[in-house]
Image (cartoon, rainbow, N blue to C red):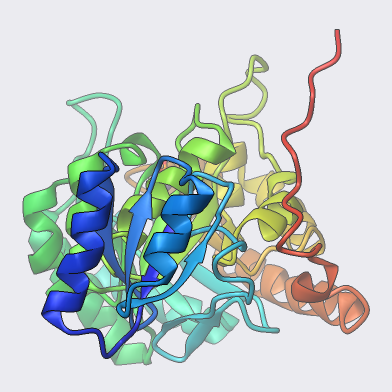
Length: 357
Ligand code: PEP
Ligand code: MN
């Protein structure tokens, strides 16, 4: 349940709402969203309580939202959200292409990568500087120096940049240099981190936890949104499977499915999803065909020499082919099958599938 307050409600009028909720023993969270103050309640309200709330001068409306991710759901916010990062717009007609190395390795490497990404038609430059490596002995990234190098390389070629933040205390300082902050798969449910990146107000790319359900992912997005930051892009990057031929299993069904559940843009990372550079182009194109709002791929000027994730890193020529093919596939889908037109009514959210057998 959501209680939406009038913009012009006075402090006393707001207090009256809080008093009614407190007297009824209802726990609520106050959230600022789309220029409105809201109280979000986990509990359903009795119709008499709803009536007493609606009668208060501060209350504009009371909305029954059935899904637990209130702000992320299409129930409260039916229109598709657009998330702007520099000139790139996630959720618009053109798919956004993010490209760059797994890790920033030095000035020369990131500048070469930035030039190749820009020449290939990428819209955003990526590069990790705080790296979540499985082994403590693997290359850990260049830290803040790497973030600065990334920002300089992006500025040089006119591309905005995205980089990962791993610690809540680093969110602010990374946000001073980066246009978009990435929360990685391993940190999808690091709730203090989600709150901290949310508070920066920067656009956030939230990668799916490799063993997370869609509901857990959307509730993780909700943490960022609940900080009053509506600029969230979801990134599917594969989930754990049992087959060792690919690094992960790319869950492309989640793309149209999420389009029904949430207004947030969704992009796909075929690099981490597959772990093989030969699979990045076909699966990237498939993701666009499934309706993804963009792609993030790992590209290096000398892929075999990459200090991290070399096996899944493509070269500049493959990136150019991907950009061309992604564009053609999207053009072939329009206008008959744009994401928004294919979305079912937001008032009838898709029910979770029932498992058989
Ligand atoms: C990355 O994109 O650099 C990364 C580490 O990916 P993930 O969090 O999906 O493993
Ligand atoms: Mn990587």
